Length: 68
Image 1 (cartoon, rainbow, N blue to C red):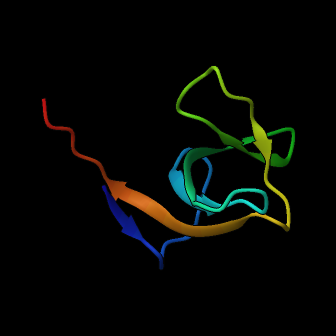
Image 2 (tube, rainbow, N blue to C red):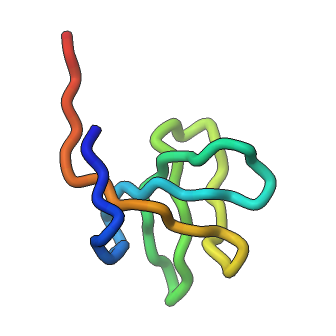
C-alpha cells in the first residue's frame, strides 16, 4: 500500500490513523454522516469510531495492491 502524508483526508478515502488507545496505527475508511466524521473499519464486525481531536490522521492511501 502506498500512503501520502501530504494529502488532505476527505470522506471516502482510506486513512492511516493513530488512535489514543492503540499502540499501533490503524487503516480505516473516513466517512461523514450528519456532519460528523467517523472511521469505518474494512471488517464490518468492528464498530465505527468517531473521529475526534484525540485521533491523528497520519496519511492517506493512494494505491493498494494485492497479490493473488
